[in-house]
Image 1 (cartoon, rainbow, N blue to C red):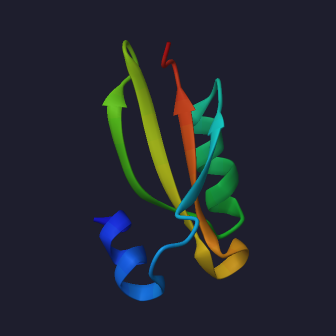
Image 2: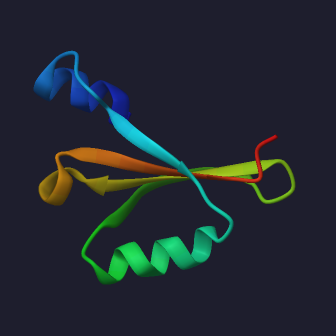
Image 3: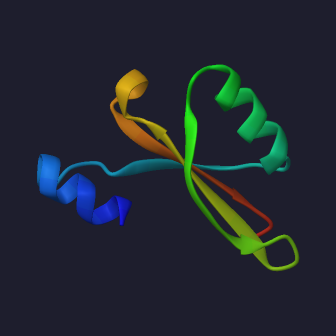
Length: 70
């Protein structure tokens, strides 16, 4: 998993920064255009979905978007 990979590579540290969004697909396109790829996604649009982006090369952390969670 991405969590274990970061622990193995860097030990305890900030793993990711999360942002609540309203347009996951748009964020995937926008970040992809900037060279930040999707690492993994889960959930579903009816109950909430999350997406992790690999921004380690550019920002030093992973990014997460959350949409629809209550």
